[in-house]
Length: 79
Image (cartoon, rainbow, N blue to C red; front, top):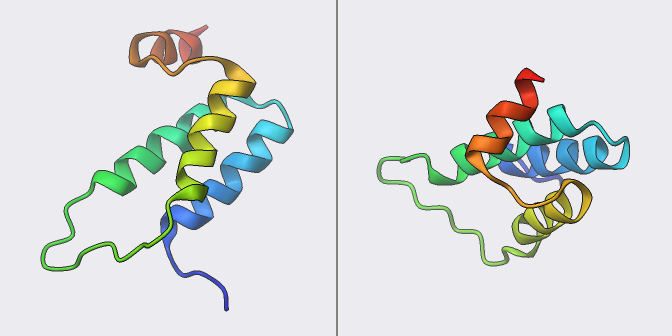
């Protein structure tokens, strides 16, 4: 069964961006993943039992491009 979560699609796109060494796109996607995971959903709770794919996305980003820093991230995109 295919997942219908937006976060899963973002994780998949982020993996491709990392594989293709597209730091600017990967950074935007990891920021959007953070936004998606923190969004208030009213009465709905995220019933995700396993978070390995989420943790792996953040680990891959840091392994590929270095530690995430909001200040550095915004500076990198402008350069």
